[in-house]
Structures are given as structure tokens and as C-alpha cells.
Amino acid sequence: MATLLANTAAGQRAADRLTTVNDAKAFFATIGLDSVTVQVTDDDLSHLRHFRDRVRTILAASTVESAVADLNDLLREAEPLVKLDRSDLDGQWHWHLAVTSDADVIRRLQLVVVPSLLAMARTFGISRFRSCTTDSCTGMFVDASRGGRRRFCDPARCGNRAHVAAHRARRNPTS
Ligand SMILES: [Zn+2]
Image (tube, rainbow, N blue to C red; front, side, top):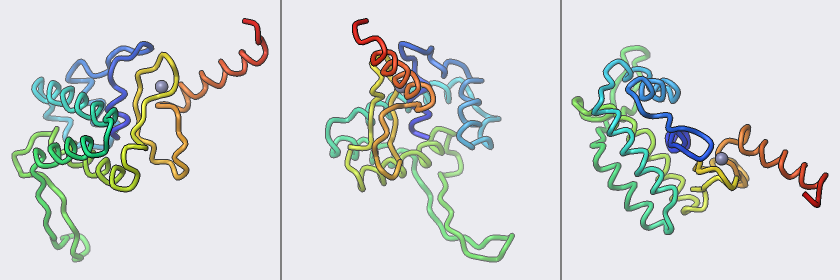
């Protein structure tokens, strides 16, 4: 999810994909936060863009200490509300992780994105926060793969492009 958000930013190969309220709604739908899309406003769009900048800064952090400090700031700002609640559906007790009732959509997003980034930082430091290795790409990603050897922001697009370029270089070593 952090990867999806980071890569809505403009790169040399793509335009910024988060410039209108409809873009923001499409992003929330993509990540499965459809329930919030009805009330997205211009303010939410600018907050979402600001959050994206902060996530990109964290993914580019040079030390795990600075990444975790920034993530903890984001978590505190989200004002999470944690409670144990009995479900009407099955009568079982469930953990509810929510934001305060008047919290905006961006705080809900922070609450989903930030803990997962903190968990990655705790387990792997900043080694799984990466920039795409394709020369002309400004994409960033979180490598959640088991082996941790992911190199491209979008394996289907950048990975394939690098593969084709390498193949061409082998066939035409002088070009
Ligand atoms: Zn890329």
C-alpha cells in the first residue's frame, strides 16, 4: 500500500497520478478503502499528497532511526483508538483498531500504512525500503517478499524493461 501511494508520484516515465479528487478516490478504491471515497474533498487531496511526500521521504531514509522517528510521528498524528469489542455477527470478541470518530480519511490511511512500515523497519531496518533500480525510474517500494531480493518498483513494467534492455545488450555488445 505504501508502495502504491509512493508510486503515484510523477516520474520521468509517468505523470503525477494524484492531482484531482477523483484521482484520490480511485487510489482509495484501489487499496480497498472504498468506504471513505464518498467524502473525499480538496483538502483531503492535498493532505494525501503531503502524506505521499512523507512516505517517500521515509522510504529514502538513510538511517532506521530517522525512518522510525518519522513513522512514529505519523502514528501519533493518526490518533489511533484501540478497543476490544463483541461482534453482533458472531458474538465473539474482536480487536477494533480505529481512529477517533471525526478523523479524516488521511488519518485512517495512516493507520493502515504506518504500522506495516514500522513492522518492516523493526524486522529489517531500512534494508527493505528501496528505490527502483531502473535508471530512469523514480519509483520506490517496500520489499515484502520472502527472499528480499526485489529490485523494481513494478516488476511487470520496470523489471520487464530491464530484462529486454539486458537481452538487447547481450545480442548487440557493440551498440
Ligand atoms: Zn521502476
